[in-house]
Length: 389
Image (cartoon, rainbow, N blue to C red):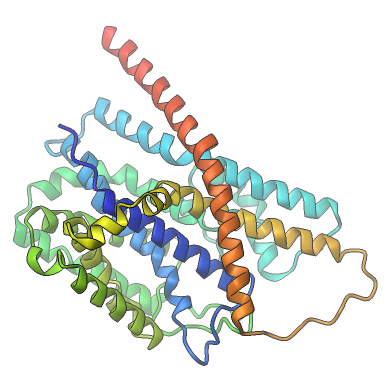
């Protein structure tokens, strides 16, 4: 029997995707906050880890019963085919988009320097095309930079069916004890994380973060999140702290506390544990919060979340490319303007978010959904042919 659709978690996914857009605008375009006042925006990189935890929860919820007693080839191939149809078409499109930007600026005579030169890494092209960019060893993410997490998730998709039988046979106490694995992993990442290069004035290195994207650190992040999500699912099914976490006011207090912790630079290995509480509580909630998250606006954001996540950096790179190309033949370019903190940056960011939403709505409608349906139809035909042999 197909499990009931958890609509409130769909909305959470959309909110997290929008927060990632704010984070990357802050990094690539203009600062949204003065680091002397608050580093809250910088901690939004943790939305990727939120996605990892949510993925472990949702994969277990949707596909856990497929592999509870073992991994059968037919089920494994059907599951991997569905995951491939879900992520690869848009992954390929956005990679080609960024590659096209690279060809465009090279033909225009733009000379790349520093971080930009590392982003457009030609040796990484085969890794992106084969969904093996989870093995990336570059200091920075390459091409469509958020796709490093897609490569890491793909590796977890391969591992997940083999984790389920072992996980299912474990007692509740063993599963609770397994939380020591991601706890240790997050602490390890915190102290293995080298200082980030300060390539912009408002991007000083944050202490106690684990924003690691090089293999195997990126995979450790993904594995820790995925395992946490699977444990969360069992807690949800056991109705753990149902009366408390199902209360919308409690969830609002947890969310507010998280923002305060980010503002105060509390170590991320501690604050990340609010994510499981928010996911479980939101899945429980049947009150005003659930009604708000089930509105058309939030549901649509959730539907578009993968497109939002995948297209926002190509949109940024497109605008940056136009700016770079416009300055190629300028003999006396204006002197760089100093860092500006103000409401104008926030207004620009909101305009950018609006553009991303328009593009994401189009890629969802004309790329994600049609490609997924077509690939799944092909897989269903092959399954039927196999059954008759």
